[in-house]
Length: 335
Image 1: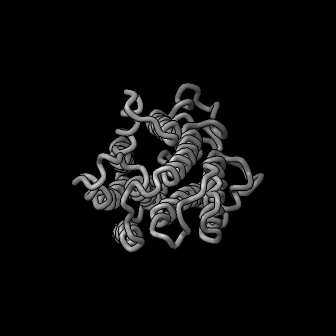
Image 2 (image 1 turned 90 degrees about the vertical axis):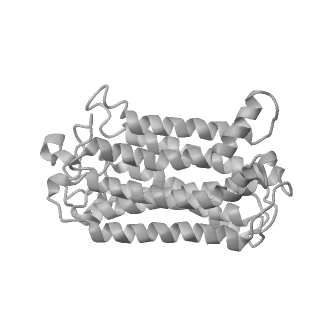
């Protein structure tokens, strides 16, 4: 039983598709029940830190969201500045939608990794929900950027008008492509990894175009704003997140040395959540410093866009759940 103190397995003791390159030990028994998976989080295994590195930040972000909803106009706890209006005001709508997705994706990620030793469809469904939450976080970022971080000279342009609708479409495509990658893992693992990477890299690059432009202008000396150092830190963390996910370093260099602490997926989680915290602070600064300088969407437009993205992702999840075929244990994979 994979609870605290339970015997962990080595790579040769689990089906091949459960193994991760460079990780030789610390595996939980495959085909565990949900209860056994949750109990395993209180002992050290190769998924423990994957869970806690996102579960604890998720709690903090949920606390920020509740505080924002209950105490309108007070500090958000990230930049030391106050928002331009209360949660019911149109200027805070995009921020609340964004903050909600910030809390959702690490919560879904920690749940997926916690249930990663389950057999059958349960583990695939958990990771598909993780992908959907991450796609919604991308949409939430686009909503915040459109409302608070867009270059002023682009306001009202065709790109600005279509930016959020395209982000909604990208969110659905991201969920679909990432979930489809689960069906390719057993037969074509390299293609599966490539599809999953593309599913999140492309929406990130599109969503970040306004910020990249502002950072470029700052680099050539044509503008200087207080949020730009924070945006640059977020971008650096995003790059490190990508590199850790694709390279599987450091465990490839020293197999067995980073089985429990320090392997690439833990680095991926830490860089990703640090990037989100930098992004959250940057958006908070933009919201305070640029108040009244950008046209703000109505609450209906903001939450309508988020709702469409969520509805599309839920529909895709429903199709994927119904299409999952029974597989032998050796075809399952958790990373």
